[in-house]
Image (cartoon, rainbow, N blue to C red; front, side):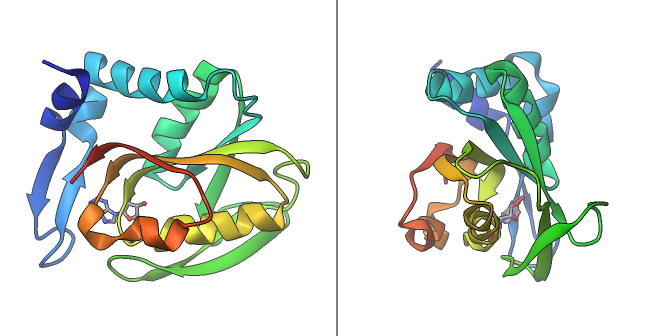
Length: 174
Ligand code: AMP
C-alpha cells in the first residue's frame, strides 16, 4: 500500500468533537504507530533537507509534536508559537480565529535572528486562521518562510486561499 494511504488509515475521524458539526481529525493513532510516525517525519524531512532551514516552527500544541521531531531530523532549531500567557520572556502577540472559537498566540521576541529560514508545521490546516496568525508573528520577526507544512489539509474549508503569499504543503487532503 502507498505510504500516504497507510498514514490516512491511521487518522481517526471523531464526529461532533469538540462540538457539533466538527469532524475532528485525531492524529493519536498515527503517533502511536512506529511506522506511521516515522514515515510522516521522514516525508517532511526529505522535502526540506538541503533547504537551509534554520528553525522549524511548531504551533501549540499538536504542531509541537511534529515540529520537534522534524527539527531534530533536519538538525534545525525549534521555535515555539504558543497560546497566550505560556512564554516567559518578552513576546510578540497576535489574535486569531479558529474553526471553533478564538484565541491569542505569542512568540518570544528573540526567537529568531532576522533573515532566519523557517518551516512552519501544524497537524491540521482548517480555515487557516491559526497559521495566518503564526505567519504574522514570523513576518514581524523578519523570518524567511520556506514553506508551511501540514499533516492534514481540510480542503473544503479553503484555508489555502488565505495563505496565497506562501508555499503550502500537506501530506493528506480531506
Ligand atoms: P484553523 O485555524 O481553522 O486552520 O484551525 C487549525 C487548528 O485547529 C489546528 O491547529 C488544528 O489542530 C485545529 N483543528 C481545526 N479543525 C480541526 C479538525 N477538524 N480536526 C482536528 N484539529 C482541528
